[in-house]
Every structure is written in C-alpha cells, then in structure tokens.
Length: 114
Length: 113
Image 1 (tube, each protein chain N blue to C red):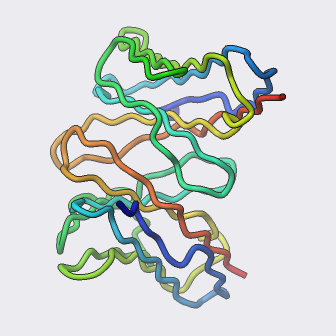
Image 2: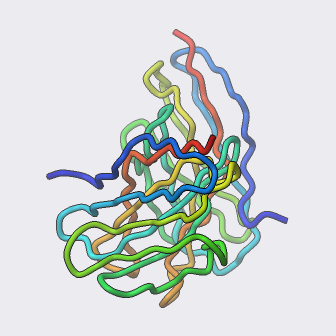
C-alpha cells in the first residue's frame, strides 16, 4: 500500500522561475494538505484541498502561490516568480476523511532558490 | 505568542534512558493531539494520536495529554539509537472547514549507544 508520494524530491530554481510541486495522496484518501517547513522552524499549514475544491487556504501567501487538486491526477502546489525566501521543504499530507482523521505525510520536496 | 511551544533541544541521552518530550499550547479548542517522528531529510511519521485528556501507550511510547494545563508529553522508555530523530508535536481542533494541524518546532533527540 503505497504511501503519500511527492515529486520531485529536490527542486532547484533561479529567482523569477516557476516551481511546481506534485503530491499523490495515499490510495483511498481524498483530502490533501500542504505544509511548509523553513529551516529551524516547525511545519506551517498552507492549504487544504479536496478533489476540485479548495477548502481552507488561510496559510497560503496572498501572492504567487496557488494550489489545485483536480479530479484526475495529483495535487499541485505552484509557486510563481520564486524568491530566495521560498527555499524550504514542502510537505504534502493526506487523510481519508475530514474529521478526526490523522494525516499521513509524504517525503517532501526540498526547494532551493538560487 | 506561538500557538504551540516546544523546546527545540537538542537533547542527548544514553541508550536505555527514559526520554520525556513536552509541548504547551494556548488554544483551548485543540482536542486532537499527535506526535510525529521525523528523521533527517524525511517526512514526518505518525507515532501517537490521542483525543482529549488522558494517557495512551503503544510499546515503548506513552503519550499524555493534560488539557487543564494545556500540556502534552511523550515518553520513550528504553530508548534506542534508532530513536534518534526530531520529534514534533501537533494538534488540531478539527472543526468543520478548519482541519489543519498546528506543529511545534520539534525537539531533536540523540540516543547515544
């Protein structure tokens, strides 16, 4: 039973480029969460999605960041015009249901902006 | 004030020692409490999941929640070198439409053989 899958595992971008991070939830899970982990900091919630719906994006920066979870295919976290401060580990988690369900995390994508 | 506070350590103990890890929080709406273990450059792995106050034991691990004090703990008995990792506490109110987890910064633990 495959766990949460994320790719790429490492991503290097130059300032101003776009970064696309992909997340495939565990089989049977329809809820996806994105978190960001900055060096020496805890994970910070960014966005919560179900298929074709953004449920809670209260943790997303107002500009340059967007997320989607289409009916078919993985969830995508997109960062436009990256800046050095976007360098971090981005983790995706999934759960089967919304309430009272634990979230299982993927291995993360480490983004480095040069 | 952060919603979840956790001593970042680092914490070093000899093999076989009992380890105590703790977090405090400020939001009284939190009802679900979790401990994750994160090895270097890996994703967090769920260790313990508890609801409301009380104790939960799983093998060498015991999680305690004291909602009156807004204080949670994770105890590791007979610690092993393989327990060396960063331990993250996390919690949630799990209200409808607000499902996100709030994490502590993590405590880095090293168990010395």
